[in-house]
Structures are given as structure tokens and as C-alpha cells.
Length: 343
Image (cartoon, rainbow, N blue to C red; front, side, top):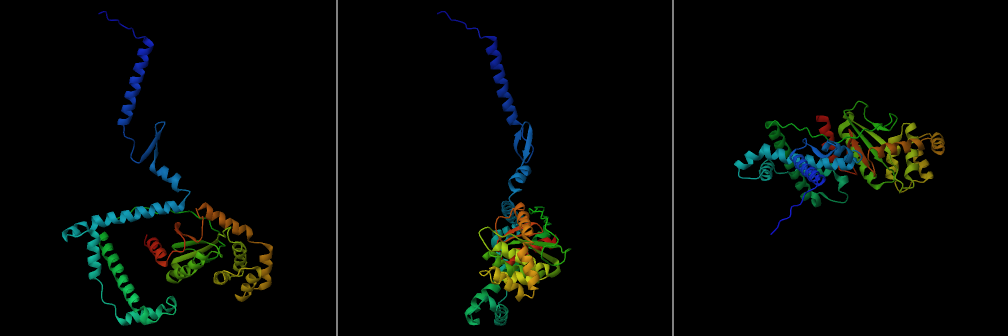
């Protein structure tokens, strides 16, 4: 049988060689590992995870805070596993079991006198309830607080013995608030809490006593600055904000602030004027200020500052730039403020 030979054109040979080289090049590229922290390479230049986070989280403080809190929680567990793992293993327990056993051992029986003292100090939080009705709940609460304190002490001691150092940084927003903004506490306080609030917002009303509790607990260590953020869904929030700014001119902002939140459902022009008189303002001077709309632009400017920092709802707080969303309990603020004071 006669075999035919085919001559491969030079152009095809060259083409096949280029394809082979390209494939080889791609394989070689796959073998080259990019620098640590690289998420993509464009034209030979890496895009790092830090750049990606800056783009994705930089304009969304809530998302950035959620990511931070998830990392902080995971980091705390990893630290405990390494700091207490050997002792827990020796006791044939998990770290959580080890902590639970030792915090339970550290509790002491709660006396009737302690229950009674707590009840008397917190009657306003238990309206219509007698000591007998609340005794069991108060006792359980006080035991729980003992366990928390004992656990915290044990964890801190273990961290100290293990030489733990934490470098995870919380995201912080930079806020260019006016020096004329209503404030409590000295300008050189170590911690500044900036609150964006709306006088018609029910959650802001719930947060107001917590803000007062922060001021009472920390005094000159904390400066609290109020910023207006009247939401569009509240038709009387902006007029109330302007009215309070006029009260601030006469040094009565916080008294007027409390009146507005207490009478949140009654914020007509007539109501606003009545509250001005009740807190001892010069009514004529206040009325002239309110009617002129003197502070309308300032209220809008404060809203813009909030939006730039990532505020979308109220109340919103920034503790040394660290974001806290919503009417959180005092303990949430305490954790952050104590951390800021410590560091």
C-alpha cells in the first residue's frame, strides 16, 4: 500500500509552535504564586485584600463593623484555645467546659439582703412588681453577674500569663463635627461619643436614657456630641431639630432635648413653643430664631456628615469613630468605651 506524505505549511508549523509556547507560558504562570494577600492580578500588578476591603468596606461602616466583630469574636476563641487549651486538656475538658466549671466554682450564694438592695435600687425598672414576685429573677441575675465577672477575671489572667497581644484594629470613621454642636463633657476627654438622632424616632427615644447613663457613669472621661439626622419619614423631626438648635443658643439644649423625647408624639409648632417656655427659654428670642429658619442649613449639614460616615438610620453612634448602630444596651457602649480608655 502506498502511503502519502503531507507537507505541513510553514505558517501552520509556526502557529502550532506559538500555541504550544502560549500553553507552556500559561502553565508556568500557574506555577508562580502571587504575593501573600493577593486576590487578583491585572497586567502583572496585584490587587491586595487590603485594597479590596478598602473599596468594599470603606463606604459602608456598618458592614465594616460587622466584619470586624466577626473577626474579633473568632480571634477571642482562638486566643482562648491557645491560652487555656493545655489546662483544659489536662482536665479532660473543652475550653468552654473548663471556663464554665471554674466560673461556677467562683460563685457564692446570693443573700436576701443583696436581693432586697438590688430591688430597692431598681424599682423603676420593675413597675408594679413586688420584691416577692421578683426575688427569684433577681437572685438568678446576680448569680449570672458573678459568673460573668469570674469568667472575665479568669480569661484576663490567662491572657496575661500567655503574653497575649492583640493588633486587630476596629474600623473608625472620621467625623468633622462642628465645635458649636451640643455636647456634654470636656473637649479633651479621652473618648468622644457622637450621636446622630431624630426627635421623632422611637428608637432614639429609647436610646436617650442610655446616653444619660453613659454620661453619669464616665463623667469627664467621655464627651457626648449630639448631631441631627431627621429622617424623611418623620414630618416633624426637622422642625424639632431646628427648634432644639434655637434652644442651644440659649444654653438649654439638653433640657429641651429631654422635653422633645418625652413628648415625642406632640411636636407641633405650638408644642415646640410651649416646651421652650417650660424649660425657661426667652420665648420671644426663641420664636424669632425658630421662625427665621436660622439653623435649617446646619441641620442639613449634620445629616450630610452622617451620610458620609455611613449613617442610614437612627440612632447611630460613633465611639472614637467606632460605629454602634441602634438603641443598644449600656453594656454594649461600656465594652467599647472601656476598651478605648484602656488602649
